Amino acid sequence: MVARLRPALILGLLLPACPGDKDDSGGDSTTASTTAGSSGDASTSTAPTTTVDPTTDPGSTGGSTTGAPALEPLPPLADPVPLTDEVLRVPTHPRDMDKLFDPRIPAELAKGLADGYGDIELMPGEPVLPRTLDDSPPPKPGPAPKLLARFVHLADTQLSDDESPARLANFDAAASGAFRPEEGHLCRMLNAAVRTVNRIHQDTPVDFVLLGGDNTDNSQSNELDWFLGILDGAPQVECDSAEDNDIVPGPDNDQKDPFGPVALDVPWRWVTGNHDVLRQGTWPQMQFMKEPTGTSATGGTRDYSMPGSPIITGTVLADPARAFVNEADQLKRVADAGDGHGITAAALDLGRAVYTFDVEGSPLRIFVLSSAAATGSSTGLIRQADIDAVIEPTLQTAAADNKLVIVTSHHRSVSLNNGVEPGLGVGMEFADALTPDEWVDYLGTHDHVILHLAAHSHTMHADPRSPVGGHAYWEVASPALADFPHELRLLEVWDQDNGSLTIRTVAFDFVADDDPIADAGRTMGVLDFTSFWEGDGRGPEPTDRNVELWIAKP
Image (tube, rainbow, N blue to C red; front, side):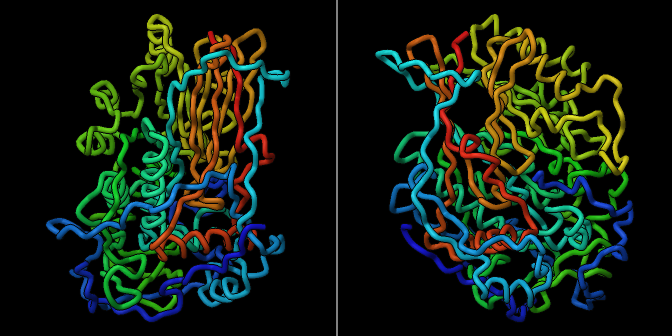
């Protein structure tokens, strides 16, 4: 054991809020199994809620940073970042399979934290394990191995407007991820992740950050604003909506205060997930267009004007900034931000995040593929029509250009379906939708595809894919920043100078030095896991986490 850490200060958990009197100048984790109908009727919930009818001036809104002064970001991290092959953050409290308390209830959350459910200890790291597609011993490296690319995979941030009337927090018992005790802290946790990546880049240069999708949680315009502002470095970001909340009086000391984002020092590339384009990651936006900008919260949302920010239903303040944004408009905004973040003119014409980019000075080409279905369902959708029109021509062009291809999408192969949500019937069935096996068999026809990199399950995986009669390749899934263990993956692709390539991937935690708000969010995320309200994102085995994956060079 290296050290035992008590939970960080849980800012504002039970403190009274002071609205209108602030000085702020300076899983598979989806809602797939939600049983809520189109109205999100809270009557089926077992979670205690408060029904409110606020009388606060509806003209007072939070979250806007238009014309706001720049706030000073946190300084760069002073020390190198330990990866999980060096140090592990391990919860000290055993998991309560009986769910002894409900973290949606402020008093029970506070007691769980006091009882150590958020505590961790620092332990020796896990080694990087070599693996081959057929489990044979790996060959010895050649005399001059060469690094082809080093990049970070940042997946499932689920940046959430947890005050939106479109939330379904009362259904978390049926749908893991409908509520997270740390959801209000996710902006600061993302900012801490950015700061961490920047330090890694300082010590071992990183070529780019590749998103994993589900960058936002409820496909809302304000969530996208916050996400872009944090990664690109807006003058300030305030992850607050409608009423301007100040949970702990004073500037920059609670999760609803504006802060100066750090901004990534390396390029980043956009990938679309189901939560980026669907209401709560499952329902088509068109059926609920007035819901996020309305005043009726039926499925349960947070009220930060009340002590402990409980879940409430009833009438809430409206905020037009909460409007849904579809994928086409989303891509326009991403393309107009920073360096465009990979979005090409062809992707804008298609209205979907489908594009490629090359890693300079290497034979690698990254093929970004949108697998989210705008027609509904949290599951992934890849159609034969997509293959015929875009995917096959793209892969053939890569082969003609002698490129090694990394295909990346939000969904893993096992998360693909026919367009209809299992158990709910939400979505639209497509007769030409590929099954998981059909997708694997298809990629197996292209021997220059070395990796399918995905996310969605909020769990780490590293699986060989060996289609019958086809080319074997690797499929890797990354954990969610939003959920335990709140980690990212660092990936390196090497030419081993012996006829083989390796894909080395090691997970790492974000560092929250000088940021008690981000640290408090992670502490509550640990509690969400130990209280058995959230799953284990670390993956089934050590062979899913820190690994060196060998594959023959085409």
